Length: 196
Image (tube, rainbow, N blue to C red; front, side, top):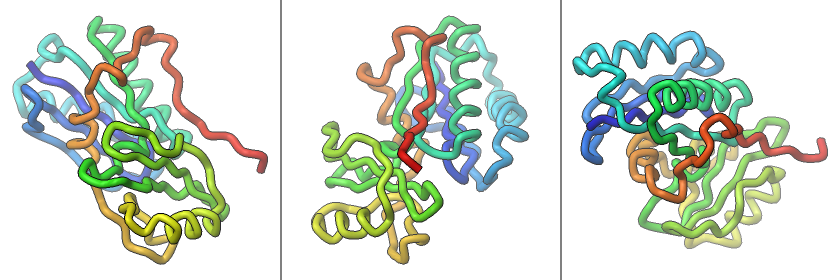
């Protein structure tokens, strides 16, 4: 049985097909602010080239944010429509958690613009710091105070290098019971708000 994996929360359009817990095919490329133009056709291409019908899909997992406002909505909307129309389980994961290094404590970061970052801190299955917004100067101090943690994500905008996870492999690994959605139609994207 096959599962669909979708992430469009940041710059990438990332969709994958997993079978029995292993990714068998994927389409991943940078499509900043254009994911909505390509997601449906690329998903269709992925299924066609693997000779898979929608009825052969038993589950779908997507990132739910935080991230690009439009990007987060695109992945979640497509995943919800698939889960509802096919009557299959929907799994949702933090778009920050999919950036983590599963083998070490991780500070996961996405550029939130205006000198701010979306930040979540994880250690294996534990959430050390819930997804939040942080001023970049405060984030850099936090990173300095936690030198034994791996910084994950595209953090070049901070002037540092970060661990780059395979987001589809991470989504595949996070298709676990705690991420399973009870009410598909009630699922909402995560838009972190602050006082700006």
